[in-house]
Image (cartoon, rainbow, N blue to C red):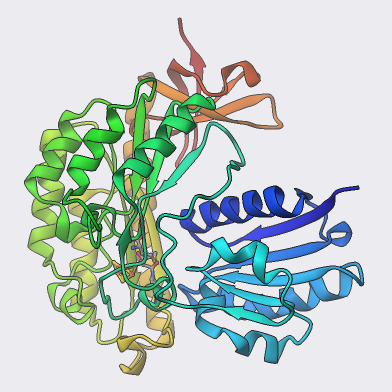
Length: 430
Ligand code: SAH
Ligand code: F3S
């Protein structure tokens, strides 16, 4: 009987891809097969996120639960950003954990497995050219890492401390991954990095930027769509926006993480741009790509954020009218500059977050009606239990139609017949 692996993945798309890499390595070298039943697993992995405080707290209670329900012989490993950040502290607090593997060390998974109490969290470790074995949760959803780590020092963010300095994966390897994804049935690839439009850092033999990388990936035959996340507003120069607008394979959906609409707060966050620059870039995008969808991340109640600063954020929300909003109340993180700054009253933060989200809901309600009756091209990537297949339009509308797996991996024209804030229903038209 094969050994069973249970893996829980928290956090961002990069963690999803890291989990796929670990599953592939464990399968190829150790014969593990996936299970969704932790109680019958021989190995339980938690791939953690540390970007906000809550999931870190949750980790230890979750570990306790796994320890109780697991088979006596089963091992538990903690991976990802909290592993990088807390290291051996995790084994101190939960002595039954067998190993700790940092976000920058996932290629060592098959090795740490055999070293009880191993803690591999080296922040300078370079796995940018590691030839991972193949595994994808779905052949139709092809995440491809283009860089590792982040060179920015946003004062609220722990990521540079858990994923280390930014290194780019060589373009040839990225193109080869895209080719392989297409051969295995994908029509779309999703390029991943903490700061994708800063691509090119620390490449040993080549000078190439993100725009050029996009051109090379889009030359892959059979590939029809490219998505990417996350770009940084500071690096959204004209060349990048023009390539985004002009290249028909690039999906017209842009993530523009604003964080704050106040130039003062942006400075304190060390984001490197002002409110005006952000608005200027969003305006250029909307002008060049009329049906673009813009998503954003916003943090409210960063230390020092006054009512007036928050109104600046509301103002950007009202001007840009983001199609999607990911919003968070500031959460102080260890190892960051902002940790030492005086916090905004928590109640005030909660109120600001509710106001922001309520206003965004209004905007979505105003915008959603315009989607009714539209015909969009949808790439189907997921089968749902309710007799629907789900996919996304080029500009990132989540769309469901009645249908079966025959649509998976295909692109079809769909007429939207029902709309809501988060999902639209439609019918496939010939
Ligand atoms: N470069 C990545 C950032 C990863 S963190 C990206 O652009 O997606 C993802 C989001 O979490 C950030 O954009 C930010 O909005 C939020 N975040 C990061 N640190 C935070 C903190 N200390 N408190 C609250 N939200 C935070
Ligand atoms: Fe974090 Fe800023 Fe990098 S949000 S991941 S330090 S761009």
